[in-house]
Image 1 (cartoon, rainbow, N blue to C red):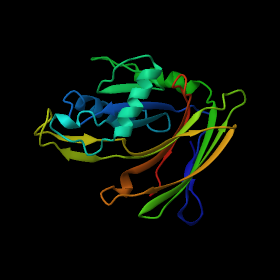
Image 2 (cartoon, one colour):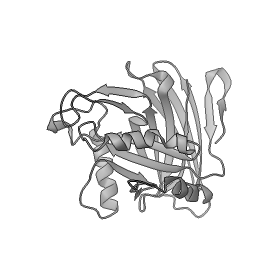
Image 3 (cartoon, one colour):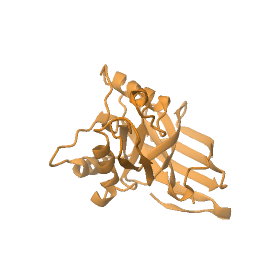
Image 4 (cartoon, one colour):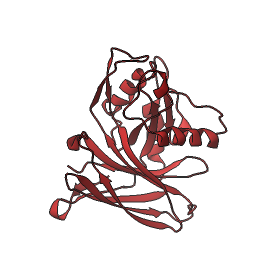
Amino acid sequence: MPVGAGAAGECVASSGSLRVALLELYTSEGCDSCPPADRWVAQLPAKKLAADRLLTLAFHVDYWNQLGWRDAFSQAAFSERQREQSRRRAVGFVVTPQLLLNGRDYRRGVLFDDIEATVRGINRSSPAAELSMRAINRGSSIESTIEVSLVDGVQQDSQVYVALYENNLLSAIKAGENKGVTLKHDYVVRSLVGPLMMRRAHLSHKQDFVLQSDWKGADLRLAAFVQDPRTGDVLQALSMQCP
């Protein structure tokens, strides 16, 4: 996953021959069983599962908000994305925390998990798409261009998503099931764009993200991934920092 700087402060990144997996965490500050899952995903880079092998995105859902604590990172769109993924798998309910690895339920063991081996297997398979990103951080906004190409034989109705996420976030919880606890969050999705529909084997998309005053520029990351809408399988994923 080559990452570098282009002209005039432009950041660039492109996917390589290694297929990067996507791990989605559905979580909420109002759920007392979620903090352990948040801590677990934060420790993945120590297991050699950084963004060059595994793109992790934390989607804070909003359906816990009416139960005593409003999660400031939650969005109704993230709850709907979780429901859509459940419907695709013919599951009639959603839970938190939930982990989806390349669109499939991932259940980690209490004493042992096989996440590194499972991701290694995904990494060894051939990516079915190529991704590249260019971005310029203007301070108040990030201007980005995403290029996607599908390999020969791949269905051209694949879906592309672009995400802006943030690390190193802290919340002092004052009500609800986690009252009195300070929670640390990583990979928190601030904005998700998509699905962008691929009508041909190539897609070029420009996306500008307006940065809020409380977002920390040094902790923001830009990501993109290509997903099969029928199976949820992720064809390729890519992320980068553009300070």
